[in-house]
Length: 147
Image (cartoon, rainbow, N blue to C red; front, side, top):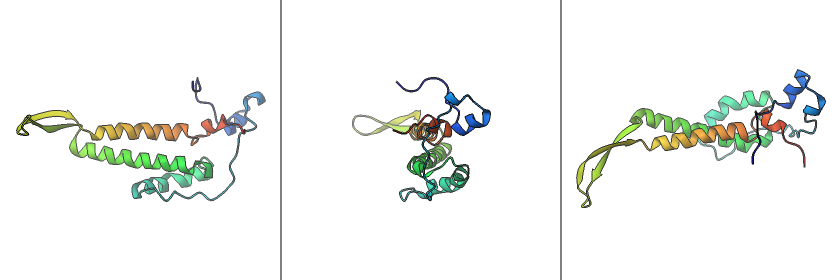
């Protein structure tokens, strides 16, 4: 079973707020200050997302070398989400599909949910999961302890 209760405060915020010492993870691991660069598998749209968010996250020490793959996955999910949303905007959420009989002859049309909505839902879930649960947020990192 996973963690229960509200998401914890980041360790740095606990220190600033003067939380009790027993509530502060003094063993929280800290990555080295290596260079942070996007992975080579990111597409053009995902690199645009990286360029928009990475500098600020790195300056605030939220994005570290440990987070590069997870953040790249988040950038990729955001790019796929934007692509799917554009398709839904162009084609609408409900589309007309041809209906054929058993002989392959067109017999009419029917209304159906646009299949791009599936891609949009999947990308939405990935954006939320990667952004909040893969160590990209300080509150998630605060619960880590060295082995």
